[in-house]
Length: 107
Image (cartoon, rainbow, N blue to C red):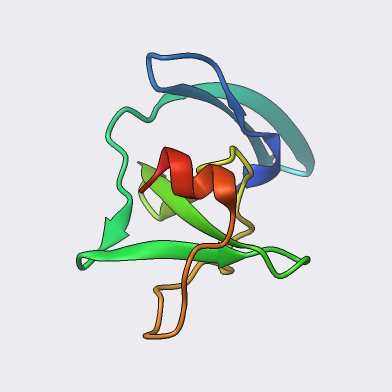
């Protein structure tokens, strides 16, 4: 079984590379690996709807994402914050982005 966490993500540069920290079990012990993943194929919408995330302060962010491994989708905001798994959503009629950085970077 291999488990992955988005908590170890860091942007590496303009080439679309990110580092991903992986934690996996092999026999009775656990191993940690640092992998570089090409995330140049990113998306900002799902079914033509933008992806949003609301942080703990109530600020609504615009998100982008990438499918980095079968079954592993990572999302981050326009202001370079990692989105916790399962917390992004597609907007309803009353939802709007309130983060000024996300608005300027991802109009």
